[in-house]
Image 1: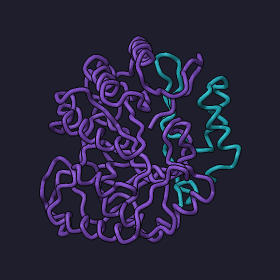
Image 2: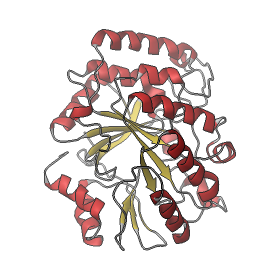
Image 3: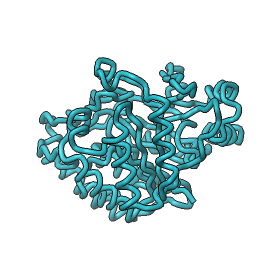
Image 4: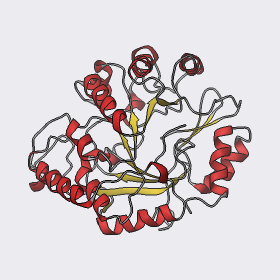
Length: 299
Length: 58
């Protein structure tokens, strides 16, 4: 059975706990250590952080999507502005890096919209970005405003501080974890972040203990041995049987178009090798991809 | 309201891979019939199409 942010898996945190966490989260913005940049800036007064995100949350795109994992669709995708990564191949970059792009979130209004979506059949509210965990205080506010728990999925790079996972426990029904890189060197070169493997693997373990999770990996050209294989091997060893979604639809975007290694599509040989490797592992890899003319929808 | 309901264009990326596969980065319901025409044998896509036909997420 795959994890899903459906009604049967909805979390619940009582209002008093939510209010307490919300106060703590707002206080934490005074010296922000919400992610492993641990920059310590005061977001309440707009100090410059690496992510440049302040206290307000902005949404730059939202729509009903049928392209996520089959067990999740239809999802209502809500793109939150601002990111703490600078992936050279980002398919929403550089626009998503702009922290005030789009409309400022009014929690009451957004909760009403999300509640209506769920009532009309959306199985999952897919919070993505940018990096949605930078808006933890807003996510708590949404949960506090909702009269019924919402099926919130956090579609995240998982570079958050462990305290964020504590605050979101019982608020987030599903983690959609982007496990992008298999080593620190690629993470530094392609996303500009340090200690990647240590941070991400720590957070995956913590999140998996308490919340359903889908691990996604985007197969990148020339990164089969250095990224794909270590990601799969770590997952098999530490989270055996995990729901793992391989995305083979890499398209060079943003700065990747001028990177000699990243400016091509993933080759047919790389895809074949990756799928063959994955099929031998103790993971739930979703529907078999056997159709000759196949639509691989990806996040 | 979503982008489409506000009559704001929704940017989507569709790519044909070197293996002949068709990649949809975004798949709103308006694109599902087209995707199904292009890829009639895709089991995952059939599941998505079925969810849309049931009126989910409208």
